Amino acid sequence: MKISIKTIPHKRQRYETSGDYWITKRGDMEIRVSEMKDWKEEALIAIHEIIELLLVKERGINIQEIEAFDIAFEKRRKEADRGEPGDHKDAPYRKEHKFATKIERLLARELGVDWEDYAGEAVKV
Image (cartoon, rainbow, N blue to C red; front, side, top):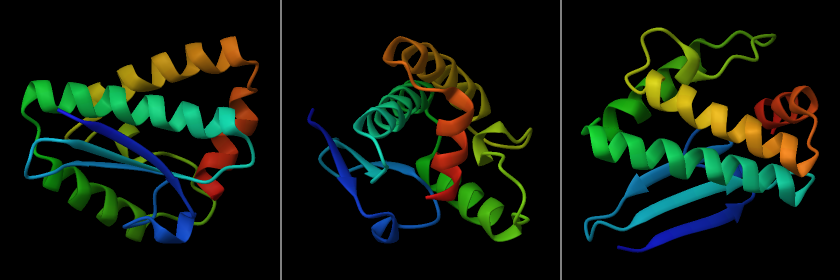
């Protein structure tokens, strides 16, 4: 198994998200992170995505269902809404997303990243 993490311009994301993942036909994990103002923020998103993906894979959650949920969520999003699709009560990967966020918050503290500033930046990318 190969895990590939790449930072890309936000406009190259497959849909409106700062972090994206999928599993290839060969079983490799691909993760894409939007370019941020600081490498630490990019690393935080990458860590979140890899943890979430590992848990999703372990629990057999369909990635296409996650993508469909996220895309529909973003289409319904109101401009002032800063919430993440994975936090929604109907998200098929809510438990996995919340666990990944806990780890991401712990790492942010260790890296000296202000969570509120970072979370606002990640949504605006």
